[in-house]
Amino acid sequence: MLKSDMGRIITVISGKGGVGKTTTAINLGAALNKLKHEVIVMDLNLNTPNIGVHLGAPIVPVTLNHVLRGKADIEEAIYEHSSGTKIIPSSLSVKEITKFNTRKIPFIVRRLKDLADYIILDSAAGFSEEAIATIEAGEEIVVVTNPELPAVTDALKAVKIARNLGKEVRGVVITRHRGAKYEMPLSSIKSMLESPIIGVIPEDDAVKKALTKRDAVIHTSPKSKVSKKYIEIAHKINGSYSEREGVIARLFGNLSRSN
Image (cartoon, one colour):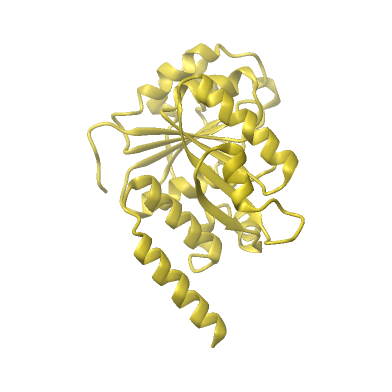
């Protein structure tokens, strides 16, 4: 695995729940790991966590909740998925649903910069205290939304909050894209959010299949359109994306579909 001197902290946010934020955080992390980078995906959705559920580690002895309460060090809460991607899950226990000192979050996250090339933070949806603290902990922000007006309107709030906190909005990921007439045009979303669209993820049952297998879709369905799009996003984040290669890949994809 490649390892740089200091890791990049990327916070994945959304204005509302159910738009594919956690799926994006997991698959972005897995895709960057596939590009030979050390990656840690951290579940900062403290009251309704999903990272552990998605990746087959719903119950673990030490969680981020223990770290926030001062009962463990952050290194003790890191677990390695079979793919090599590392995760820091939060607790699923109802007893753990409590108010945390969210001011600790940025300090805890910064301790991970020496341990990985990329630290991906899966934020809580919306604009709760923990969500704001997660945005503050990030260096770059990726906003996830569906191509529908209510979701994009909430994404606009997320973009404004991130910028008000002095954060760079690295780009927007559009998920569950069907190309239907009722969806907002991508050009309108880009204009409304005043941010580049770095990925458009099509609606695909491969995502649901990955969840049942407790793995990232880029591992369970590597040849799917969804997987290829997440790999493309990872290349863009990593700075290794070639527009020419992207055009060629789309061309060959169109040719194979026509044959």
